[in-house]
Every structure is written in C-alpha cells, then in structure tokens.
Amino acid sequence: LLDTGDLLLRMRVHSEEEVRAGRLPKGSFPLLREALLAGEVGRGQAASITGYGERMARNVVADLLKKGYLHSAGPRAALTLAFPLEAVERWFPRLYPPL
Image (cartoon, rainbow, N blue to C red; front, side):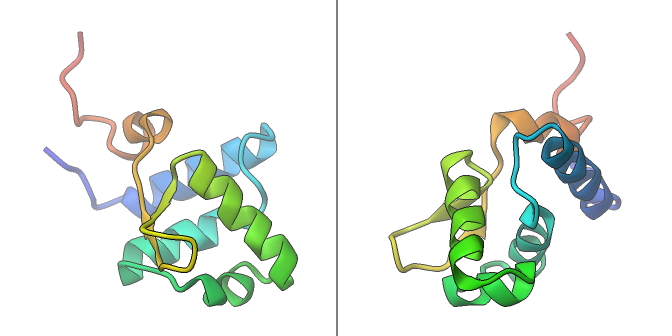
C-alpha cells in the first residue's frame, strides 16, 4: 500500500519542482528530509540544515508550516513531517486506487 522505497526521491523531486514554481522556498527539502529521517527537527537546527542564516531559516520553516508540509505542537516545539494533500499523491502515488 505504501511504497516507501523511493519516498525520499519522490519528496526531493516534488520539492524541487515546487521551489522552481515558486510555491515552496529554497531550502525546503533538507528540512523535510530531516523531519522524515529523524522523526522531528528542533527549530534551532533549521539554519544548519538549510545552510541559511537564522532569519531566512525561520522564514523557510514558517512557509512549510503554513503550507502544511511541517507540523508543530507550538511556537517553540519541534517540527515534524506533515502530509499536505498537494503532496500526498506525489509522495505516495499508489496510496489511493485510480478513479
């Protein structure tokens, strides 16, 4: 049901396409990858993961939270991977049967 073998590749390709289209900020994929692999990401790690300064990293985090790619229990809580509807079909292409 869940084809996770190439999940990181599908996430990377989707993220890169969304960045090129201007729908996601640059630096999105490294944060999403870390959230997937580690289970959660401390907000303070965002700058080192993205390679940006603190302010720009906060902007990337805020955008990913707003668009539903990341989730957090509170303003200082760790970040976890979320699955927005826009990404689910790309990340898990055979999750739902064809109509």
